[in-house]
Length: 439
Image (cartoon, rainbow, N blue to C red; front, side):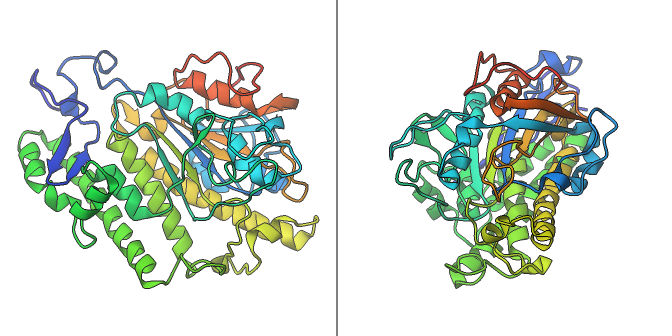
């Protein structure tokens, strides 16, 4: 434990020429003999929203029983180790997403719960993540982080345009935020220090490491820390280095023309997509651990994706497969894909659960929405949505339960509840009618 009355600022970073690496919450950032809640290190909630396209097979997603004694469903099995932090929310409807052009507006209405007008320019926001970011990320370098597991815009429509299918995040009603799918760009945005993206890219060359630029700063800091903090900083910096190695490996695939950028073809060798998901999730976790931002959104796959899953022995493209017509074989394949996505998400949850953050872990302090804005993909409906919450939001979320709401309960009520649980005093969001007090 750091025992002097002098302490590090929570905003301390390691700096070098062209790089700035944030730090995890250390004992040295908490004045000796002072209660955590009375310091600048008081836990502040984190929020993330993780989107999968094309709904879910309801019978394999929704648990049969409600309350605290429910059995975890097949698709959600990877989340079983985190049961005490898991809240399954069933029965909600998003009327804002309902239209003759479902794929074109489904992603953009998930976090806004606002039905767009018939016009080409977007007009729906702000999304719930951006409402939260105004409060949670007031003191962080980045307002929020938006990433994607694959590129491409998704779907357009003559009535609604193209502004809603390629993102789930809207800073304002008319400002959709692009979901970045280049891992190198995400990494450089998190840790590069240049004034512009071009400057950061020039400073941090492809074959260099940002940790080389901040080595002197890191060595100076380590000499001033106690043993526990030194171990935490060393482990954290090794995590940064490992992510950087993976980013560089992924970048090499982009540059060589192999892997994930083959147009109009199944993307990547069998393991590439899983590695891409892990990489983006790891950078999301680092962005929280380093106090770079408190809010993140992730589109794991785009709407109308033609991705195949040869690693699962599934050669059917995801979108055509989603029009299953209740065919048992197609439903089994969809269940397998949806389990695969949940498994990737669960690896991220595991990392959060293992990462110390003040008086708890990142998972203790987080509130994460995982799910889709489509229900039965064959019908293109939006009722009931497959959704779960992970995390306890600094103790404001009960966890460990399955809550099922009556027919036509607005999905926006869940979004409003999320805002309240992370400390945002919103009166409404989208077409909400009230808070879900059971959560």
